[in-house]
Length: 410
Ligand code: C5P
Image (cartoon, rainbow, N blue to C red; front, top):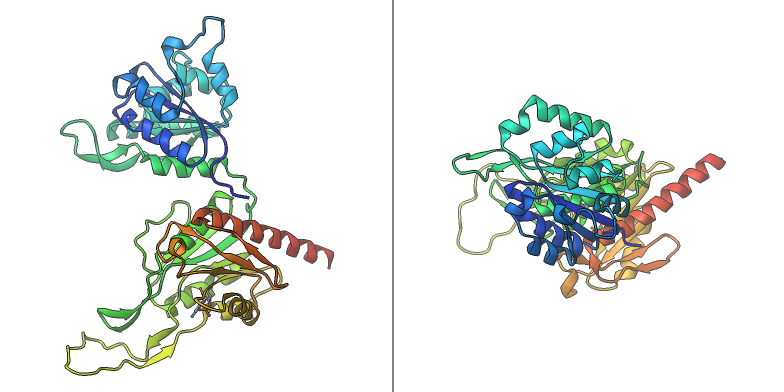
């Protein structure tokens, strides 16, 4: 089962210049699979248009002009009951103040007050306004009622001559991530998941190394999915171009040896390990302290194996801990993956197909076969890396539950 994008979301635009981005947010949410409805305050329509919102939402926009229907329906009640989550983007200082005071005089605050089940605010304002004790007190009050916030973020501000500061609305993609987080069932709450991602670099002098093209996307997707499902997540990452995922403890390493040490010191805390990193199998015997000068003719670099991190974790694995590895094979995939599973004492191995066009290194998609110790093979088919990650976490969830039941029966 895929956990991406299911739920009904009301996106309400408040009256700030960031309302320009609200149509993009609606579009991104629909692309992620959510059902959306748009609403806008009177002032928001100075910065964006009803048509832009309607096109992006794929349906009519709730406005104050149409708040009460001719037959007597009230939009704030209807929206509040329909939505699984209400996202206010942008949220203004005045909007937060009205909501915190219960002043339901505009459509957005009225919908919040009418009992929207969950509310996620994406504030956008001048930094002085954001830092003002009045705004901060309002935010605290809303948080205490269970409301959530995304941003504001540091960056270029819209008003002329204002430069940079903490006040920009989070980008639509970031808001979608938070939506996903809030709507995902927390079935991994109470568990710690240790994830590795990316390549390692094995230097033979200070500026040259052996590595591989791993982007880290699979491991980062696993870390984010585990976070959204309520787990405490530690991500041990080799060098990647990806930003640190929010809500995850990120440990950056370069060499296999550093990854080995980072994993071993944290392994005792882990209930599950997802070893998605493409650890280099060899390292140069020596790393020259200075850059080696270019020489004519044939040159050789002597290599020794790096420590096998997963095999070591397999040796140290205690009852109840779940270990998941990846195997990247270009031939005899299943047999080799199965052999690794046994040798490294894994609970599950995800077999990748690096030479298939869509699931190659760096792709947004992946296709894996999940093989367990009984030899059972589950074929995921080509999906987003996030969906593959969620499928692996479904299996981890079942394994953790089974191991817990076995322990209780002893
Ligand atoms: O043996 P092979 O490298 O094919 O096994 C792949 C699995 O083992 C991956 O999960 C990878 O992260 C892990 N691995 C490791 N340490 C190594 C090499 C691979 O933990 N030195």
